Amino acid sequence: MRPRPLAGRDNRHGLLRIAAATLLCAVVLDAGAQQGGGVHPVSGRRFAPVMSAAGADWLERVERDTEEAPRLALDQIGIAKGSTVADIGAGSGYLTVRLAARVGPGGRVYANDIQPGMLDLLRKRVEHERISNVTIVLGTADDPKLPPAAIDLALLVDVYHEFSQPQAMLRRIRESLRPEGRLVLLEYRKEDPAIPIRYEHKMSVAEARIEVESEGFTLARINEELPRQHILSFTRQ
Image 1 (cartoon, rainbow, N blue to C red):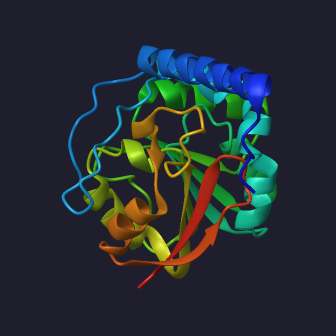
Image 2 (cartoon, rainbow, N blue to C red):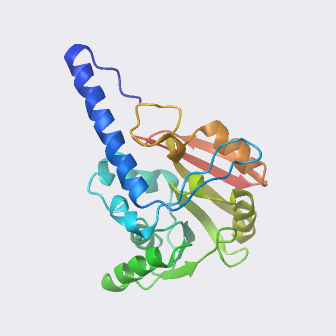
């Protein structure tokens, strides 16, 4: 459910809070961003700059629990015990450790990122928490370096919009999935201007659908239960 507009003074205060949150988000993202650029040839969407390890604190902010509801997100996605999950764009491991607990000792999480600095943070976290079912993978801008036909779920949380070579990445991800495997994107809703995230770091359902389906996937489910993000589930065509 979308928040209803406030009236009068409450409305003005609400708008001020949104503006302040948007400014804070922009400062954090800019401080940790690497050079972006490029336009998707199918949708015309401009690629967002990549958040570098210098912005990792944003991934670990306390507010993320209420803003993104990670427990609800994973409940809605469905993480089977014993399954193999790829956390693509894992960053500092905020979701990696949660996925590792859900798949259990009989499962495996491939935690992928293209930045060694992020993977250093993730590695320290996994070692500190003594998690043994996570494999850390350094990918490239056009290849996540995942094993072929081995992944039950490829999960991309607030990362697809930053891909500089999304078509190549989607082809490689498709190759890594088992025949019944799923690709799931979580992206901030571009359709809702009240969500305090910079425009280029949001995606609409229409953008995601046309881009991903053009690379051999089918949008199977749209879930809007989260406070600010779409959950978009794709299957292989």
